[in-house]
Amino acid sequence: MPRVVHFEIHADDPDRAAGFYSGLFDWRIDKWDGPVDYRLVTTGPDTERGINGGIVARHGPRPVEGQAVNAYVCTVEVPDLDDRLAKAATLGAELALAKMPVPGVGWLAYIKDTEGNILGLMQPDPSA
Image (cartoon, rainbow, N blue to C red):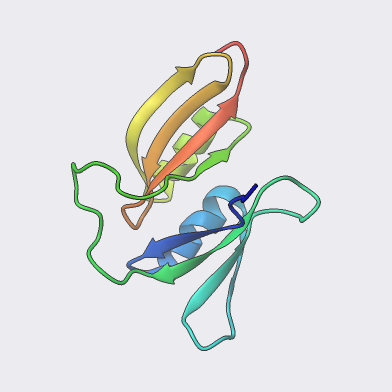
Protein backbone atom coordinates (compact mmCIF):
# COMPACT_ATOMS: atom_id res chain seq x y z
CA MET A 1 0.00 0.00 0.00
CA PRO A 2 1.44 3.45 -0.88
CA ARG A 3 2.76 5.56 2.03
CA VAL A 4 3.76 9.18 2.40
CA VAL A 5 7.56 9.27 2.10
CA HIS A 6 8.39 12.99 2.01
CA PHE A 7 6.80 16.31 2.98
CA GLU A 8 7.44 19.75 1.57
CA ILE A 9 7.00 23.12 3.27
CA HIS A 10 6.42 26.04 0.91
CA ALA A 11 7.89 29.28 2.21
CA ASP A 12 8.04 32.95 1.29
CA ASP A 13 11.44 32.99 3.00
CA PRO A 14 13.03 29.50 3.12
CA ASP A 15 15.77 30.61 5.53
CA ARG A 16 13.19 32.03 7.95
CA ALA A 17 11.17 28.80 7.70
CA ALA A 18 14.30 26.74 8.32
CA GLY A 19 15.01 28.77 11.46
CA PHE A 20 11.43 28.30 12.67
CA TYR A 21 11.35 24.52 12.23
CA SER A 22 14.86 23.88 13.53
CA GLY A 23 14.08 26.10 16.52
CA LEU A 24 10.74 24.46 17.28
CA PHE A 25 11.63 20.80 16.76
CA ASP A 26 15.45 20.68 16.65
CA TRP A 27 15.21 19.34 13.10
CA ARG A 28 18.40 19.35 11.05
CA ILE A 29 17.99 21.47 7.94
CA ASP A 30 20.68 21.51 5.25
CA LYS A 31 20.79 23.46 2.01
CA TRP A 32 20.74 21.06 -0.92
CA ASP A 33 23.72 21.32 -3.27
CA GLY A 34 21.59 20.54 -6.34
CA PRO A 35 20.42 22.91 -9.08
CA VAL A 36 17.33 24.14 -7.16
CA ASP A 37 17.23 26.35 -4.04
CA TYR A 38 16.01 23.65 -1.64
CA ARG A 39 16.56 22.70 1.98
CA LEU A 40 16.53 19.08 3.15
CA VAL A 41 14.78 18.50 6.47
CA THR A 42 15.83 15.60 8.69
CA THR A 43 13.27 15.06 11.44
CA GLY A 44 15.03 12.23 13.27
CA PRO A 45 17.06 9.07 12.88
CA ASP A 46 16.11 6.56 10.19
CA THR A 47 15.63 3.95 12.93
CA GLU A 48 12.56 5.85 14.28
CA ARG A 49 9.07 6.06 12.77
CA GLY A 50 8.52 9.19 10.67
CA ILE A 51 9.48 10.90 7.43
CA ASN A 52 11.88 13.60 6.31
CA GLY A 53 11.10 16.44 3.96
CA GLY A 54 12.14 19.71 2.44
CA ILE A 55 11.63 23.47 2.37
CA VAL A 56 11.20 25.20 -0.97
CA ALA A 57 10.45 28.77 -2.04
CA ARG A 58 6.73 29.31 -2.58
CA HIS A 59 5.72 29.69 -6.23
CA GLY A 60 2.37 31.39 -6.16
CA PRO A 61 0.24 33.30 -3.69
CA ARG A 62 0.45 32.88 0.07
CA PRO A 63 -2.49 31.06 1.70
CA VAL A 64 -5.46 33.43 1.97
CA GLU A 65 -6.36 34.45 5.52
CA GLY A 66 -9.70 33.08 6.70
CA GLN A 67 -10.10 30.59 3.84
CA ALA A 68 -10.39 26.84 4.19
CA VAL A 69 -7.15 24.86 4.18
CA ASN A 70 -6.48 23.70 0.62
CA ALA A 71 -3.44 21.53 1.24
CA TYR A 72 -2.38 18.58 3.36
CA VAL A 73 -1.82 19.43 7.00
CA CYS A 74 1.09 17.65 8.67
CA THR A 75 0.81 16.90 12.38
CA VAL A 76 3.93 16.47 14.51
CA GLU A 77 3.88 14.40 17.72
CA VAL A 78 5.25 16.37 20.68
CA PRO A 79 5.81 15.29 24.30
CA ASP A 80 4.28 18.46 25.85
CA LEU A 81 1.78 20.41 23.75
CA ASP A 82 1.55 23.46 26.03
CA ASP A 83 5.33 23.81 26.10
CA ARG A 84 5.62 23.48 22.31
CA LEU A 85 2.79 26.00 21.72
CA ALA A 86 4.60 28.52 23.92
CA LYS A 87 7.88 27.90 22.08
CA ALA A 88 6.14 28.22 18.69
CA ALA A 89 4.76 31.62 19.72
CA THR A 90 8.24 32.88 20.64
CA LEU A 91 9.43 31.78 17.17
CA GLY A 92 6.70 33.77 15.40
CA ALA A 93 3.85 31.25 15.06
CA GLU A 94 0.19 32.15 15.49
CA LEU A 95 -2.42 29.90 17.08
CA ALA A 96 -4.84 28.72 14.38
CA LEU A 97 -6.92 26.22 16.41
CA ALA A 98 -6.72 26.08 20.20
CA LYS A 99 -5.76 22.94 22.11
CA MET A 100 -8.56 20.40 22.08
CA PRO A 101 -8.97 16.76 23.08
CA VAL A 102 -9.13 13.99 20.52
CA PRO A 103 -10.86 11.42 22.73
CA GLY A 104 -8.76 8.34 23.36
CA VAL A 105 -5.87 9.71 21.29
CA GLY A 106 -4.42 12.92 22.74
CA TRP A 107 -4.38 16.71 22.62
CA LEU A 108 -4.30 18.55 19.29
CA ALA A 109 -3.71 22.18 18.29
CA TYR A 110 -3.00 23.89 14.98
CA ILE A 111 -0.59 26.76 14.48
CA LYS A 112 0.40 28.93 11.54
CA ASP A 113 4.13 28.92 10.91
CA THR A 114 6.10 32.02 9.90
CA GLU A 115 5.10 31.38 6.26
CA GLY A 116 1.33 31.18 6.86
CA ASN A 117 1.19 27.37 6.63
CA ILE A 118 -0.99 25.34 9.01
CA LEU A 119 0.83 22.79 11.18
CA GLY A 120 -0.73 20.33 13.64
CA LEU A 121 0.83 19.51 17.00
CA MET A 122 -0.33 16.37 18.85
CA GLN A 123 0.49 15.23 22.38
CA PRO A 124 -0.44 11.58 22.83
CA ASP A 125 -2.72 10.98 25.84
CA PRO A 126 -5.26 8.14 25.77
CA SER A 127 -7.16 9.81 28.65
CA ALA A 128 -7.89 12.96 26.63
